[in-house]
Length: 147
Image (cartoon, rainbow, N blue to C red; front, side, top):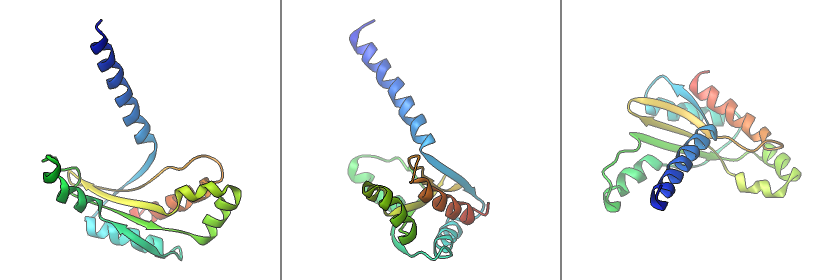
């Protein structure tokens, strides 16, 4: 076995492992409706928690706009947005436990449409005190997805 073949095989194995780890690192809920309805549902779910949407990242638009400039014709998402927000109550709780939990704030719930399917989700957080934030994210995502 040549060194190049071994390196390629190792890279392919690591790439598959990374994709699997990423899949475990997110929670997704399917949404039955339009992308606009899904984003409206996410915003409402955040606001119904008494929170404020600080910022919406229009990731899908950015990727579509910059693809040609980067030499790519691949359409990654039909639509994709990330809703960013914070919770004073939960943030204080997790940052009193460990001030370095600031790294996870603000929190985000994303919506994406790909190949006609719409999903609402969030990035899973580490075990321990950050589970308080994950519970909030899950409640918001489930509410928005109608689950």
